[in-house]
Structure formats: C-alpha cells, structure tokens
Length: 291
Image 1 (tube, rainbow, N blue to C red):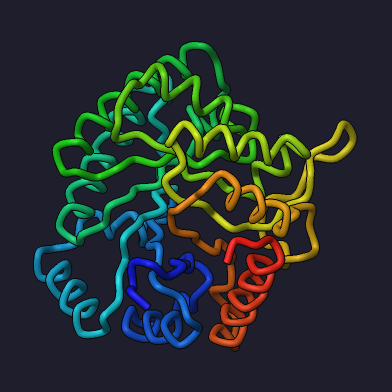
Image 2 (cartoon, helix red, strand yellow; image 1 turned 45 degrees about the vertical axis):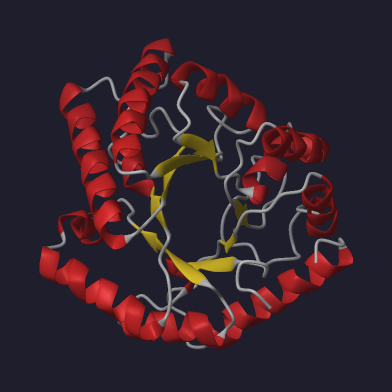
C-alpha cells in the first residue's frame, strides 16, 4: 500500500516512559504500530527548556529521526497554560509570546508542521473580556509568525468553557482570520461538553475545512451536578462513543491524522499498553466503517 493511502495514527509523548531516551521512545512507538510521536512542551521548566535546544541538539534529533525512519510532525505546546497569551500581566504576556516565537523557530528546524495551542485565554487567572481580547490579539500575531515558517497553529478545545466546542473555535477563527490557524479537536473534551451534539460539531468543523487532526481521548460528560473527567481515563470507560464518532468522521470525509492522547509515563509495560490502545482504536474504527 502507498504510505499516503494508509491510516496515520500517532502517540502522545506522555504515553511513553519519561525516563527513557528519545531513541527508546521511538522504538516503543514504532513497535506498537504508531506512525509518529507528538512532542510535549508543557509547563515544566524541563520541557520548556526544549525550546532553547542548541543547533547541535536539534541536529542530533533530526539525525535520530532519519536513522529510525520516524517522525515528530506535531508539538503539544501546553506551556502556555502557565504563560497564557491573554494574561493581564504584561510580563507574563511577553513571556508567552517569546515562548511562542521559540516554539515556531524550533519547529521550523525540526520539521514540526503543527503546533497545538491550548484553547485558554488564561488558566490560573480570572477570565474577562479583556483577557479574551488580548488572547485574540496575540493569536493573530502568532499566526502571522507561523505563516512565515509554513507552520500551522492548531487550537485544542479544552476542559473549561472558554473554548469547549467547534462553534466557539469558529468564532475565534473568524476574528483571527488566518489560514495558518486551524482546530485540533479533542474528542474527549468535545464529548464532555457538547454531549450528543459532538457529531454535528465535528461535521461542522470538517465541512468548513478547519479540522487538521483529531485527538483520540476518553472523558466523562459534564452535567449540572458533575464537573466531568477529562484526563487519565481508560479507553472504553467514559462517555465517548468512538464507533459513532468514527462513523461521523467517515461520513464527513475526514482525511487527517489521529493522535492517541494518554498519560502513561511511569508504566512498566509501555509497549503493551500503547499497543493495546491502538488495537482497541482500530477495532472501533472498523466497527464505525472508518476503515
């Protein structure tokens, strides 16, 4: 089969053992059948420091990927949760944009094509009309920077109400008005907030050519009496109807990559764990007629 005709499914870096080298992480992902790893640049100083990798470190990573015949085409840039683009504090906002610039620069050097941006104006601060305004303003600027490197910024719908649906993303995308801004929907978060509307939401995003890739994650729904569960749920134990979701994606003619999002960094059996999830997901895709 032509490699461009096959299903493409990647694995989130945090599903792999944190203590291991990149070489070992890649070996585990390949052996489990995954096509790529999505690198994490989260709030920790350790992972934010990746944005300051030297040219030698970047060269070593690129050579490793060539030697392993593997890819890191996307980055989860959740470090902006700590340094948000919509912060009222000027220093925090400037730090956020400095990190964004570095994320674009290193992505350009590494061959990363998608930077997943968190859909928060602010997280630890109080939200307001002003924080939203600042977020939009800086997202416009970041999209302009990304365009110069031919890199796409892809917003993830999150677990709070600021951006928890495709509809809300579309409102922001209209204001930013850039072809370099797209949506990277998290099926867990989307299901938790939109319930049975998740299928219409996905179809809306695909038909408007806004969805660039899809996060496969489990979650439990938000209700009037329950705040939902958004992380570290075993697949098949939450409220995401993966079979019906894949039916919807097939009907809407979604063609992009999938990313399995799970947290498994301390597992003693990472290969078995992530292979089991991939096999489970492939079965749901077959049931839904996606493949």
